[in-house]
Amino acid sequence: MSLHAHEFIRRFLLHVLPKRFVKIRHYGLLSNKDRKVLLQVCQKIIKVSYSSHTKNLESWKELLLRITGVNMDCCPLCGLIKIFLTISINFFYTI
Image 1 (cartoon, helix red, strand yellow):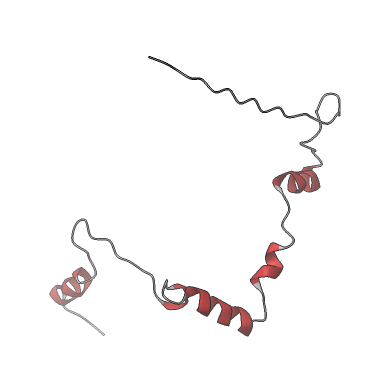
Image 2 (cartoon, helix red, strand yellow; image 1 turned 30 degrees about the horizontal axis):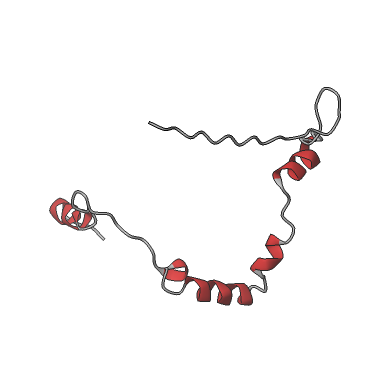
């Protein structure tokens, strides 16, 4: 297929939005309208449940310990368990 330059530019400019316009690209399986229903159908088709993936999540401390061997709950100098203190101070100002 060949196009003249004017026709090519005309067709190209049909896709250019005016200033301050935003193109919204929510369509297909992940469109907002039926996202939950369609994702459940897809999961049923490929025989995967979403809940099975969330059960085995590690915390960031467990992941760091498994990968690097660094235990964030222990002091790097003495090896004792760290104690975290949270101090909450409320200031009341009167003018």
